[in-house]
Every structure is written in structure tokens, then in C-alpha cells.
Amino acid sequence: MVSRIEELGPCKRRLSITVSADDVRSAINKSYGELRKNVTIPGFRKGKTPRSVLEKRFGDHILEDVKKDLVIDGIQDGIREHELEVVSDPDFNFGDIKMAAEEGMEFDVEVEIRPEFELPEIKDIEVTRVLQEVTDGSVERVVENLRNERASWVPVEDSGAKEKDLVIGKFELIEGEDVVFERNQSHLVVGDDSKLAGVPIPKIEELFTDVNLDQEVTCEVTVPDDHPVKDIAGKTLTSKFDVQEIKRMELPELNDEFAESFGLKSLAELQDKVRSDVANHMLEEANQKVEEDVLDAILERVPMALPESTVTRAVERQAQEVLMQRLMAGELDTENIVEAQV
Image 1: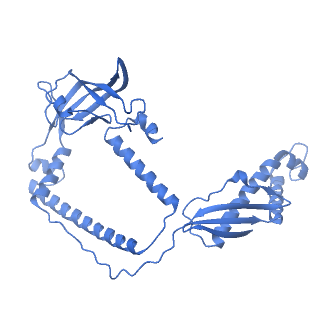
Image 2: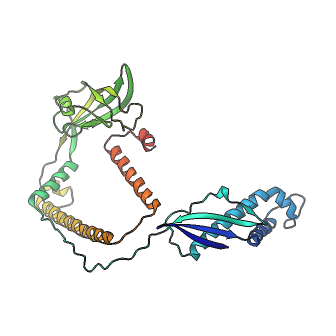
């Protein structure tokens, strides 16, 4: 096999690969030889089936397999010969490749390679490590977060919903007399959430403060143009929320017993551990910021083109992250994920 290389860009190369007629015939003969040894055809002893019979019954499959093997071998040989550091799958159309025992085979394949660059001297790069002080306030915030994690939600039946209460119910969007969207169990935290199922609710805190069980909350809403449910995107509809449950957060008392739930002996020991953990976390963040600053300084000094596939994968990852964030925020139903990705 012979291969030539052509530069198509900083990170893209074209390999033109030629497989001689002798190599094609040799590969075909080898495949028929292996087939003859292993196949059993009625009327012929194993290993004695005439080539013409094998060609009639298996010819198309043999040629397809040989072409596939020669293409793969040609690409791998070309990459090795030209010492390419490939970062993407080879780009070619297998169906367009023609192979003939009398003429051999020629085809082109495009690959993306790792960008070439030289690292600059880094001894003169100066960065500053900024280490934040661990304050009593930062320790208290972490301890309060731990209390929230261990909190329980207690049903409320004798009063309306207050700030920070969890309201659960059936959410519907109505156009005229038709329900065009519904979610049997939606939830919001009064004072924290501004949307239901990805739809902004005007004056939501005012609407849901002091609501009671079995109460119906209605208002006019405008669905965002980019809402994943295309049938309702951009429309002005009537929203209806039927309150089914109201729950209030009950925080555990901050005492030695609370600390024991984390395997510690006292509240003071818990606070000391939190202070140590916060200090370690701040140190890790400071070190990470130093690494990022050094990398940014290097990138500023090194002109580098990135392969298209690398950029595409980065964009796809960001899109997946946004999708998951919207899902976690309750803006998407699981049945709408496929539609949102399209």
C-alpha cells in the first residue's frame, strides 16, 4: 500500500491511499482459501469446493469483507507512516470506494490531528495565590446548610402556606377550554421559585402566600418561545394550580445530638471540623485558580488552532449540561427530553 498526505488546515490532513491490484488479488485469494477450508457445501468434500462455486454463493460477501479489511489496513498504515496523532474518527464514505482485482483500489480519507505547538518558557510567569480567610460566618453558613440537609418536611393542615413552605399540586395550562399541558405533581417553594414546569408565573410569591389545601390558583401566563414543549411555546395561556399538599421545613436543633448524627461527639467538634473542611476547600480553590491562571498565561503565548471535532464535542457537552440543569430545575419533563434535544 502507498499513501500520500495533504495538509488541509492546521489540524486536518487528507490521506490518499493506493492499494495495488496485486495486493487486492492476494487478499481475495487468501479469503477464498480460508473459506474453502471452513465451509461445507453439499456435493463436495470439505476443503475441495471449486472456487467458481464459492464465488457464486459467497462472492459479494467476500469482496465486501476484503474491501473493508484493506480500507482499515490502509488507513492504519497511512497514519503510522506519516506519524499522525489522530484525535477523531477518519472521515470517508465507504460506499464510494471502488475495488477491482484488475485495477486495485484508491481512496481518500480525512483525519483531524492533535495541534502542534511549542511550550514557552514558564519560569517568568507570575501568578498570585489568593487565600480567603475562614470566618465564623462561613462556618455558620455551612452548619446551617447541614441543618437544612437533615431537615424534615412536615405536612401543614391548619394554616396557609408561608415563605419557604413547599406547595405540591396539579399544574395545568389551558387554552380556551382545552388543557394543553398538565403535570399531575408539580411543586414550588414559596419565595424561592419563579417558574412552574419552565413557565414564569407572574407575582408567584404573592399568589401562593397564604394558599390553603384544595385551593385553586389561576393566572394568565406567557410561555417562553424556547420552551421544550413546542405546542405551547410562545403562547399566552391560563395556568391553574390545584393545591394538594403544603409542607413546612422543620430544622433539627443545633446541639450535641445533632453533631452525633455526623459521628462526632459534640457541637464544638462539628464546628471545628467544618472550619477545617472550609479551610481545605478554600486552599484547593486557591491552588486550582493558580493552575488556571498559569494555563491562561501559557495559552496567551501559544497560538493554537483546535480540531473541529474537539470544538464540536465541547459544544455538545455544554448543551447536555444546560439540558440537565433545566431538568433539575423542573423546567423539563422526562418525556420532553428527546424533544428538547432535537
